[in-house]
Amino acid sequence: MKTLDFWFDPVSPYAWLAFQRLPEAFVGLSYSVRYRPIVFAALLKHHAHKGPAEIEPKRAWTFRQVHWLGHRHCIPIDTPARHPFNPLALSRLAWATAPAGETPGRHACEQVLRHVWIGGADAEAADRVAALRAELAPAIDPAGDEAKQRLRAATDDALAKGVFGVPTLGIDDKRFWGFDALDMAAGYLRGEAWFSGPAWDREGAPRPGVTRPAPPS
Image (cartoon, rainbow, N blue to C red; front, side, top):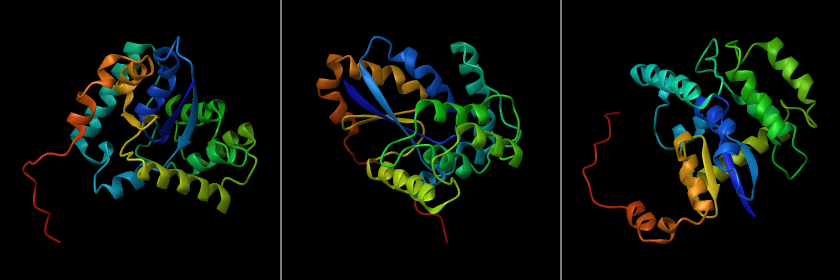
């Protein structure tokens, strides 16, 4: 049985969609999942990149696409009242539900994602976050140093493993980024011959090309 890592940030609508579709995409396969909330903003900063919601035409496209994907795959999704928002409290809450040395369970992660992507309310509203915290009954203080360190360590580990976006699935030494990579990841788990051929390494190898100059400081 393979163990999968599922790196996500509740700020990402694609994370919600992938989380919901994962069991369907992997039906018939033997696997377990370690859910790993991380800080998407830290990935963006590390790679000097803007998030989709920070580029207006891309933001508009993103939300049109994710709602179409939800419709296509029968996954309910509602855009929260404010987006982007600061998801740190929610990610820390997820980590605070996990026993020491373990990752958060699927139920806790689903409730955190549902809090954001179902109902269209403000994900940061204090009363809603307090209600979610009461429901999940975390083992440690979500605002305390230990929960913060768990989230920070998970993010650092993701960066060290080459994660650049969310959601990302990790299987063995391979990374599969995005909602639309679920079927590719399932193909790898099924042992499809393509993955043992030359294409994976060949197409992932660096090659020469034009580079843009750094912007003026």
